Image (cartoon, rainbow, N blue to C red; front, side, top):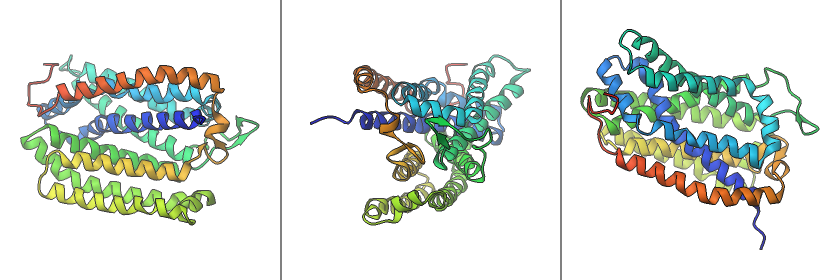
Length: 335
């Protein structure tokens, strides 16, 4: 029995991207909510809730991008020129945000500037990630194994819709994370924000789900043709069930559950994306097997991946375990 290495690697990279979206999502979400958190002490508490883990969360972005370059070099060579602008803006925003994260604690006079940089960097990074995803889903024009589209192909109504959807989703993750990590006034405020943000995310999920099959008849076929509909149908039903459970959890002021249910919405959206795209890595024409590196490279890289992935998972899990529990004002290690 031969193992399909391209398929295994597609799974690993898909997992890395999902881990990034989930883990970096809530700390970008806190940045997006920052302008609404007016009290300086609450801002410090919000920052302290992510300070121990935010650096590690971005490991997954490096793994996803580096893995794509090593394992699917053709996909990397096509996607990068097609999405230069949103990817470059995203990276600059992440750099600016990272600097702001450290500098806001070191200054009193310049704190407003760095708070603004933290919020702006988070917002731009989230928006650009969503736009890049939307541009990929709507298809990239390839001729002779190279990108053949224009400079502005990534900017369309659909990609702006997915960009805004990701901003709303990350803000929801940020609010539900703060519900689980804080108390008193800040927590009460996040409870108030959670339902409108949840409703916004659900509306965006519906809008993107309705727009996607219209982009490409192949997507429509993967969702609605028989027998594909059998494994596609549970996804929207589960989204409805999770949304109802989220509403109930917020109403009864559950602390941990809203964050887990918000993550479940992201996971279901990601599965839906997978149903639309698989087996294409760059729609509409490049499959994972077309784009994969030679078999010997895949084997060599898999040996490294088999060692590194469990280590990354272990230290990530350990960091979250050590810094579990509530963050109280003044308890952060920056103080």
